Image (cartoon, rainbow, N blue to C red):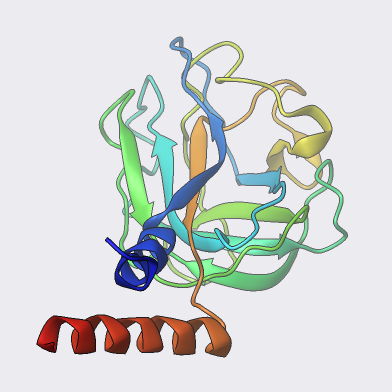
Length: 204
């Protein structure tokens, strides 16, 4: 098969790729974050795979009847001062297109996104809301283990409130996934021309 025949498939294959920005997995156990929750995290080099796709959050191992379990909208904000060890919301980047409920202990719930471009080497804040945008909810969140799946150190921190990290060691058990962002005009033109060339070849 000639290159010009393969070109549309190569371009479409590039658009279908995705990346895991980070994955702080659950480790079992029973630690939960209470009070107002903000989780900061820092991206690496994303390249073209910078369109936010989904965020998975693990429900807490023990759910107290007084704790809110949702439904929650997950929001991603820029970090106000660019420091992952402090919290402060800057600009809203994206809100999930669906709501999640953390009522199934130990299970991962998926928040889906249809917008939101993440930048390379940038600090972001993840919050869960149940009403007003930018206002984190009160409740328990996915810290399924004594180390909550990992410690990001200077790359991120989970906060209970103000700038108080959650016991100085726990992180939310969560992951952030992206896909290739919307093509630039030149890339979109290349895709269109490739499709046209493929169609003309098929007609011969």
